[in-house]
Length: 182
Image 1 (cartoon, rainbow, N blue to C red):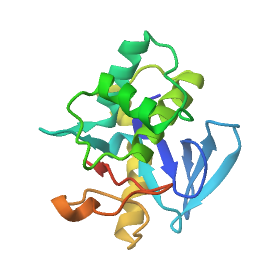
Image 2: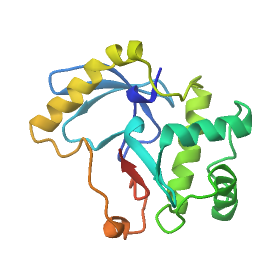
Image 3: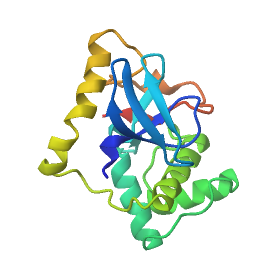
Image 4: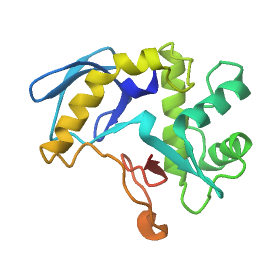
């Protein structure tokens, strides 16, 4: 399973795996408890494959950050996302020493660590870029998301432009202030 089928839904805990497309959206299964939910146009959805972390030189895809954590931990879980802000920042600095401290907040680091641990717990350990074979299988997901964009759905975020002032708000729960869609 690749990150192209894993998503975060604002206001809902954990991560979800896209299962099938429906008329009004798609069905997703929680990685936390296995419950299935219907995701419609009113949900704010972020695909993990489209999220990047700001560094001083570039925007690093979340997949690459997960790979760095995986290498550091030798495939095991990372520190708890419930650790103190200082511990999380120190840990993240050990993973990604050039992350932009002005645009990557403690809440963003907490989310990345929590998502990584959840993916490891659910058995997902391959964070490499998807292959052409996987690309063919992910067409249904891409079509469902594109269909939402065409119908004017603002909840499925596509590519967005970046400006230095775009993340001036301190992020709260559910905000990807340091993460930008690539």
